[in-house]
Image 1 (tube, one colour):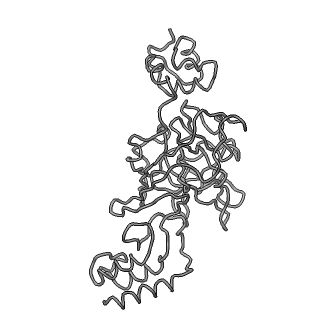
Image 2 (tube, helix red, strand yellow):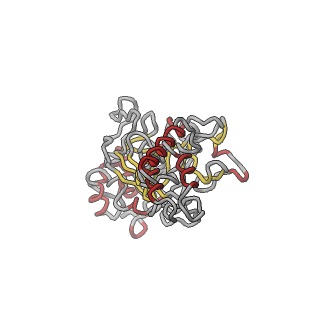
Image 3 (cartoon, one colour):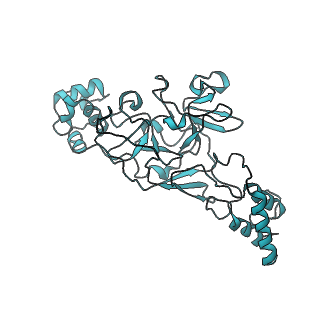
Length: 353
């Protein structure tokens, strides 16, 4: 195929595809015609198809050869961005590895804080650029035995479409965060390392689509999507029964979205635990947990509690009570008793001495 015909083909595709509505292009990860992995379907992908025309390369329709089927497919997806992320989040696709590589700052595109107590929430930490890289599976693998226990995982367990991470239900002290820890008006707060994050649905995920189903909020690190609280107009997914009831991970499946999680917030329903997810329903990409997380407890907690053989989460739990904040650096029997009663602490030897 000569260059003139090749350019004519590219121009024709551009004109025909202009204004085309792409089904599920705002919720899915990856495009069948994104051959160069830049998460967009452009003329470059057309040229890739033309370059291997008539060969088995880039055969995406399963007929054994790259040809008319692939051109029709690239036409259907032409001009598409192959992911739903916003707020300057950079996404590339490693189709060979089966992952979307998501990079960003972790800072929100909505106001964060204030956390100085002026509006009722005091948090000594400040949101900072996290320069994160997360890997989201493109083809989630269902399992009843995930290799990572989401409820025991510190730090990020998924990422929202605005690039902000979401954490499991618990704060650093092992307490249910949405019901006990102050958040800003978007239901988020920063951790000691400056990672701004959600433990629950954010206000911006409350709207619904034309069917009454909540919009997409983000993805778990197993690749399954997370939607807001509503199944249909005015009906929380958490209140469904029968075949559509959410399972212990907070997932269910429908013909449009497949398997997906539903998030809810404390302000919408105080019985919404585990808020976003109770476990992974799929196999997460474990590279996301290598050295990640919300950082260590604030100054002194590791050394003070560590010397007393109390784990850092116990120290963080005690810090929530100003009367016992000193326990991070000056552990005594009163700290032990308080931790035993309120923080689930099991002292070495079975008692406080």
